[in-house]
Image (tube, rainbow, N blue to C red; front, side):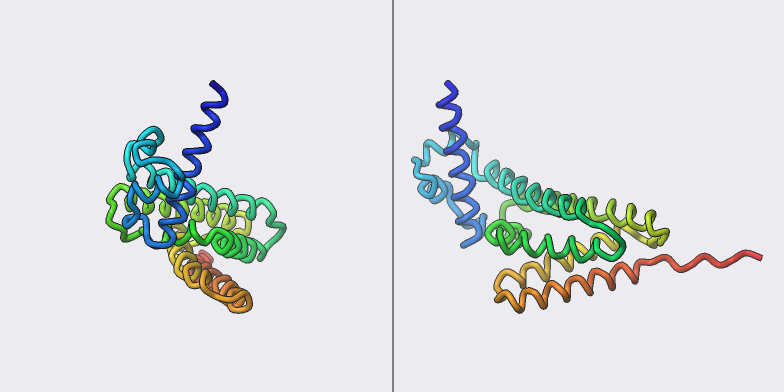
Length: 205
């Protein structure tokens, strides 16, 4: 029984990896069930022992992509050791992750306007989770530094938007140009944060 469960888990994993690989090449909405099954080395009928349909597989892909990136950024935040290092460490962690897992990030980027409503909805929900986590980080940092922000959620949304846009550019760059883009992203995030700083309170007489 244990051996059969292990085999089932391995086959499911092969399906997920085949779907990620194919989606990075041609977009998830263009990938067929038959192609995924072939990529995993099983028959199309065998696909249904693991997923009800391609939409269910797509939701698993989104969870995997988002969870991996969020976990990495959390780990980066744990290593932050002082004022000024938060933005730099988080940006470097983000760029390192998406370049090492380019196929995952291409799926996340490419399917935001994809044709599968369920997949598209899940992607936007995942992006909302990123915004929520960044919002919490900004609120925590503002409190520690005693530098209140005017609209933390809006600042977080802007940071996620610019990170995803420049992240897409980074995938096709050589290493030295990717480093330049990373520095550019750090500067842009800092500019967003400076613009979001609440004006100092006027002293009352």
